Length: 259
Image (cartoon, rainbow, N blue to C red; front, side, top):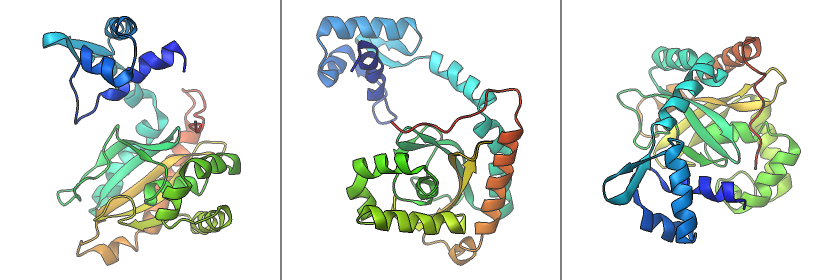
């Protein structure tokens, strides 16, 4: 790992559950020599990625807010997809999510939650593994073979636990079935109590970028109706993909490569 990677890895410590870190705790967590950690923290602070608070501790800095604003205004998935995902939620009465492929994970870029949204619903900026659940499965189903092999090599056990296949051939067969039907449905696969219904998003080169999904509680009285909404979700996904392909004021959006 390069020195730059080690410095940026310090940012991985910060989360909603642990938003404040002392220098001493960061040194212990990272395993870096104290002098090196102090130097990295100084650089991250000067860049605005971290901010100092009392007693020599750090929190996420204001530069992150500036970068988030840029992403909201310029990322085609967000800018094109946000009004569509909002309309989808309003039309159906279910919570809706917009997610992208990010390295070997899925990241939520937009959430529209209804009053009865299930607990633990995926929110903007949250990451989850690229295995299990409709939001992830529909992306997996459209990955090129070489990328899918990479995911399988790293997460074969998790793939088996999710019921996607105990070997390479069964995984390919299950994902082909999902790809051909054009949507993915899941019920409690990734998070107990949540049902999901997702369709894929593509760039102009037909590379998968992410997914749009509806979500509800597995105990919802409308679950039977929920399962019939696949055509509506697929139509919303197609609308977003067309909008992304038409965007001419940004560089062509590539599929997020898997690490």
